[in-house]
Amino acid sequence: MVKMVGSREGYDLYADSYSKDYRKLDSFDRADFIRLLPDKADVAVELGIGDGRISGEIEKRANTFIGMDISMNMLRNAVHRAPRAQLLQANSGEDLPLKNEKVDLLVAAFFFVHLKDPGLIIAEAVRVLKPGGIFLFNLIPQRREPELKVGKKRFKIRSYYHSPPHVEKILDYHWFNWEVTIVPEGKGWGSKIYRCQKT
Image 1 (tube, rainbow, N blue to C red):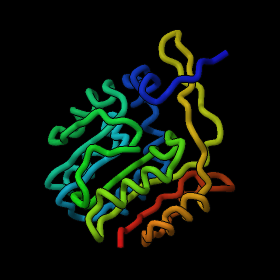
Image 2: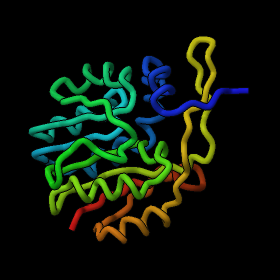
Image 3: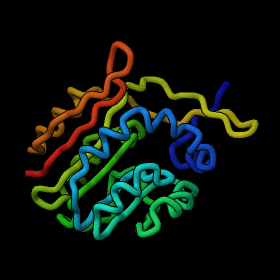
Image 4: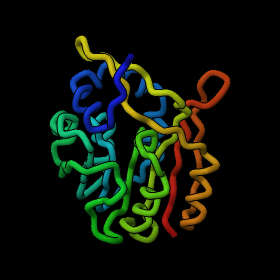
């Protein structure tokens, strides 16, 4: 039986193997994510920065760039791709260590899949974003955790599926203006990227 682990343990284990998935991840929705980033931001924050796969694109648009992740091993690797970033180890985004209305851009790529309750991070986004600030995140249709292997260890990282209508209802409740970009995969969708603006 394959062991199920939490995000911190799983990504601490997988940190040095994560980059082998870049080809799939980059082909997935990287170009769309980058296209939807604003040209400039005074303060930008990336949740679940991982090893900094897309961070360079965010960092060059921001005066101040903060990257957060639950995994310390991932943060150690992110230093090389986001050298100007202020890196913080933080839990799953339910209580962000940020002041009210100080953030222009909040990015969360492949992050919601690790949240049990997406409403908590959406409420935090409302709190930390300035009026007019942008929250950019994606949803993926992953209903079962993939099996990962590091050396002789096999494990799965606990994840959660969130239906787009459910998340959209939460966004509406918090008065976000939002639009969605659908990235197709096969006969369905592989990613839905939400660009949300705080009113």
